[in-house]
Structures are given as structure tokens and as C-alpha cells.
Length: 361
Image 1 (cartoon, rainbow, N blue to C red):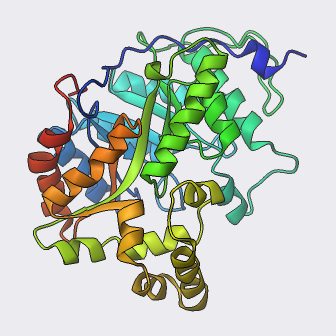
Image 2 (cartoon, rainbow, N blue to C red; image 1 turned 90 degrees about the vertical axis):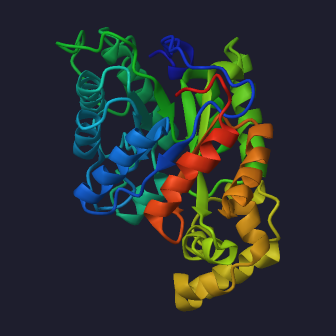
């Protein structure tokens, strides 16, 4: 049987704007945990206010991402909607390809389709099948979605799912659907550099981790004879903006405590954060939950793992991410003490200052 590494199809060509001065765009990453009408209201605001992307996850058991993405694409005109990310363990890759093709039909040219094994989530739900292989599951799903949405049959025999030989989609998108990977580890990052259209860094991202991730992407891209500049490196960046600096910074602390207690080691190890400060948060969360953890989140941890404060603070906080190689920051989850006001400030004051003239918009 052919190895996935030797037979993985070359990525379909997807045109994306090059980053020259500033980011390629600025997006919003939503929780997808609110009532759907509330999520769609934020998506509509993003479309109206000029953001390049909106990312919708499926990390917990609140809302299924596919129908929300369909409604988002149907109700907007210009913003790209990202599946960030769908799980190839929960969903058969052929179904994922069909969903990608359908979403691309609803919003032609406005879909990015992210895949990721979400290993921690799968195990937390007790849904991990015996003998599953997160890396192989993800790679085979990426490969299947690419082939099928391009109107082609699979060119390999999958080992993590079953499909009839010669199967093709009856209708496929007229333009390629870019497929990204929600990567965390070194191996997944390098494989993504070889084969994917991009990577979305999730949960809490730092400048140090971003730089490490881009280096790993570059290593994988080089093995495949590609340039890392042909990939889109996006990331959820914990963001809170408002007129009161202290209030805006405090708004991220509970979310930060939640994720510091849960994220994989490399995310924290490459960040350059004070290990004693991280340990204190983890101990507080273990003892008293996220609110207790938030009470001991230091200003230095907020600076490492977020961009929070006034609009000027957020602008200055984002600049090192561009220097580290991030192409598309996705302002994540908190937005500000007042969510709607924070989104407006991001659109009206932050975005014009950080997006290059050749940005995606």
C-alpha cells in the first residue's frame, strides 16, 4: 500500500494576497457557543465592517459548525468564512468533502476549510476510536477533501476510513477550496508545510510560538520544494480592546486561565512565559476553577499570550506577530469588556493600522 507521505497530492493552487507591509488581513475568531442568531449577528458585523475573515470552530458540544457556516455564508456578501476546524475523527472525510463543496456553492470563493484532529477534545468526550492515529486521520482527510472537491477520485487507499473505488462528488466547486490544518505539534506543523494551504494556530498563541510554528512550516515546505510564503499562517490571538486599559486586560484573564490549564506543552514552552507564573495559574485552576486562576494571571502572562488594552496597545501588541511571520491574526473570542464596542474599535482603529496595502480585503 502506498504511503500517504509519498502519494499525498500536491496542493491545489489557491491565490492569496502576499504580505508585504503589515498583515494580509484581520479576522475574527468566534466561540460558536452562543445562540446561532447571536453568532450570525457578529458575522454580519464583520462583513459590514471590513474584516477579512470570520472563523467558526466546533470545539465543544454547543453548535454544529457546518449549518452555522452555511447560514453565515448565505447572509453575507464579502467576508471569508473559515471552518476552524472540523474534526476528521467525528466526520467521515467523504462527508467533509461534500460539506466543503456545498459551503463553497453557497459562498463561492469565500470559504477556507480547516481540519484538525483536536486530540484533547476527542479524548475528553470519550469519543476516540481504538487505535486512531491523529496525524494519519488528519492527513488522509486533507488529502480526500482536496481530491474530491477538485472533482477527482482518491489516488490512495485510505487506512482511517472506507470508500468505494472511483468515488467522485457529483458536483464540485468551480474554484479550489483552500484546506488548512489546525496544527499544534512539530510533526503536524511540518506535514502541513508540505501539503496544506495553510495552518490555523488555535487556543492561546504567542509571538514565540508563532515564530516556532513558521519555522516548522518552512521546514516542511522545503522538503516538498515549496516556499513557506505560499502558505497562509493564521492564528487565534486572544484580544480585548476598550478605552479603559485595565478593564480590557482583565477581560482576557479568565479565558487565559482556562487555556493555560489545558494547552499542549509546546504552546507554552515556546512562548517564553515565566514557568512559575504558568504553574501558579494551573494550580489555582485545579484548586478553584477558572475564576480562581484568573485572579493570579499576571500582567506578564497577558502580554505573552494576548493583545489587550486600548486600541494603541493592541496595535503595538500585534506588530511582533507580523515580525514572527504571522499572516492573518484572528482576533479571538473576548474582543473587549463590551464585545460590540470592541469589534467596532478593531475595525475602525486597529485594522487600518495593521493590514498592509496588499491585504486580502
